[in-house]
Structures are given as structure tokens and as C-alpha cells.
Length: 501
Ligand SMILES: [Fe+2]
Ligand SMILES: [Zn+2]
Image 1: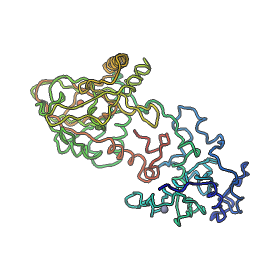
Image 2: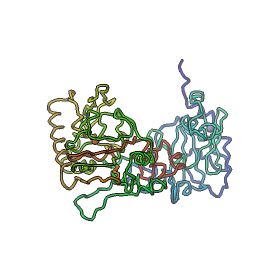
Image 3: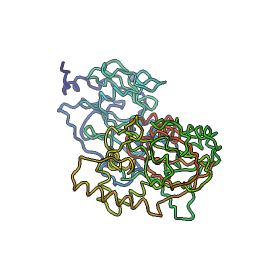
Image 4: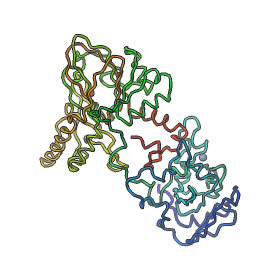
């Protein structure tokens, strides 16, 4: 069955006659609109709706034209798009200034005043009804959508709009009263009917701090076990260090597996894989993987064979008897990628471009391969070219078929170059793990390895998923309220809780 089509008559049939305003008129910044379209949220009766067919084109006033901004600054003054936690929030900046609302065919325009300047935003009309934020539409406990999207009439229309307690309240044609807090509206706007949310391309690299192992003044990011176990602020500090530096040591961990597992669980549950959950192992090749041997292990990332590689990995050396060696190696993959790009942009491009097949097949009962092949440098599809994950494991790389010999040549020279960079002395971070000090690192960024060893080592540790790590970090960093208000917000700003990769 075909659905009824929208026509411009719909707009004409639902004028804003009933528009009322529950705010004090002195707050309203009346402005003559050159297009003569209706300004709804004001006390005087609005002019009639447009008679001509509406077009999805308009000029932007310069203060809110994102395209006009420089490409580099991801934070800048556009942070008002994001509901912040501390300091002056978007809500405060727009305090008690009702937006001017205009209705067009299929969409609604709202003009806010943010930091004293006009900011025009657009919302699809059906989308706005579907995304009503009232407790009937978003379950207050589960935060799940309770409205049945497909029972909303396709031609649902806003009949009446008012402004109440910093929210836009809409009387919809289907009888529902929709509620939209101003800061939610700001965090979910389109820049024009045909242009989605103002997405500025991100920088090619996530902001990160570089650790310089050859600098004698540099000290390792470290937290204390005791503090992490008792205080969420210390957990936040820990996660921030992991995110910023790519790794962190935890001192004062009781030298036993249970305490180590509890430490990991301050972040999230331990991720199970075909190697088990929390590990407690000696080099006995119990699993057929070089990690379970005593051999030298070159810098690599784990889990390249998973669709979703583990994000964090924690190691705690419980004992090392009758021998020596087995120093731990870390290499900052982001820094190495940055160097590669600087030294040869074509090489960096090849590692972004060519996808490789990875697998884990050592155990009889497993042959794990990701759902799709991934490149070595995994980049963000929304924030163009933003590198957020490194997959580098020459041990687990299978034979790629779907490329020409010319493409092979390109990839191998790039990979050779990258392999040379990650072995530079000023990138290699070597540490000797000691019982009582755990090492945790970001497996989406840091490559890790180990020198060969003799004797008997007992090591324990485990993985944590990306989603669970970021959930914990995001909530501790921004607070639950701001995180919830920004759900779905993809505005590229450091104050957007969703901009953690
Ligand atoms: Fe590994
Ligand atoms: Zn609702």
C-alpha cells in the first residue's frame, strides 16, 4: 500500500493560528524577517504562512555557518551545540530566551539565541514528533523509546508551539503534547533542511599525549591501587590517563589473581574470548599462540582477528623465578602513524586503504575472522580519516587475495616503513614488570611486545571491551545527565561525550 504523499497544501492547512506564548514578551527579540515568514513564538498574531511552494534552500547568517570555519579547531566557540557538564552550559547560555519558530513543509526552523547571537536550527517535522523527549515517549527508567514510531501518522504536524521551563512544547496533530528541552534541541539540530548536523571534518588524529621514553624527565603515567579501589574519582583519573597516554601503571596491587581481577572490574567486566576470561597463565603453550611461549614478541596489537578487538589489556606479573628477561614493550601506534604520515603521506594512505585478512586458528576448535577485513589504520567513517584504531599483527595476518601486484607493492612498502618506525629507540617504551605493579594499555592504540625470557613466569590479566570502557569513562567524565542529553549527538567537539573514540 502506498503511503499518502505530503503536499504543500498540508502546510497551508495547518497555520499557526493557535500559537501562544507563555513567556514574558520582554525576552523576545523581535526581528523583521526579510522573507516574511511567520515568527511563531511571540505574543502578537503571526503573519500568514507562506503561499509559495517551499524550497529547501536558504542563506545562513554568518555566525552559525559552520562551513565558514577553519578546519582545525574542533573545540572553538561552537561548543554550545553540546550540552556540557561543568561551567556554563548551553542551557544557561540560552536561558529563558524562547526560540523563534517557523514552520515549513516537512520541517521546523528554530532560531535560538546562544551567547547573544542568533543560531538557526532545523528539525524534520516527523523526526521531531518521533523524538519527543516527554516521559511517555522516552521511558524515564529505561531511557528507551516508548513511542511506536510507526503508529505516528506520516503527515503528523505541529499545531501549536509554546515555550515552558526552558523547553519547547509542541501540540501535535495526533493529539500528543511533545516536550523538547532547549539544550536537547541544540544538541540535535540540523544546519539546514538538506544539510545534516554540522559535521566539521575532524583532525586526522585523535588528540593524544605522547610519551617520550628517551626523555629522562618523562615519568610514566601511574595510579595507586588503593585509590582506584575506593574512589570513582581515582577511576576517572586512571581512565583519563589510559585514554590520553595509551597506557598506565597501577602500583600497590596485591600479588594475587583475585585482586587483579577486581582491579579490572573497577572499569568493567572482563571480556571473555576463546582464550578464556581472566587469565592466569605460565608459558606452557596451553593455547596455541606465541603469547604463551617464552619467545621474543615484536610490537603488535591483539585481537586483529575480531570484528571488535578488546580495547584494554591489563597484565600483572605475579612471579618470575629461576630466570630473567621478559621485559614489556609498548609503542605508541598513533605517534608512529603520525610519523609515517609526516615522512610519507602515500604510505599512511596505503595503510588506511588496504584491508587485510586476519585470523586466529591455532586451537582445534576455533578459526576466528572478523566480519569484514580491516586496514591497519582504521579511520572514522563520520569524522573523515580520523584514526581511531590500529590493527597491527603480522603473526595473525592471512594471505590477502583481492589486490593487484601494484597494490601489493604499495602496501608492502608502507608496512615496511611503519615496521621500521615502530622499532625506533625513541618510540620503544621498555619496562620490566614487577609483582605488585600492573600495566594496562589501550589495545586500539598501543602496540605491545615482550623480550624473550628464561625461567618460570606467572602472569595474570584480562581484556576489557571498548564499549564498556568508553561507557565508564564517558559517564565519569561528563556525568550521566550530559551523556543522556547528548545521545545521538555527533557534533565534533571535545565537550561532546560521544566524541570519545
Ligand atoms: Fe599480545
Ligand atoms: Zn512525548
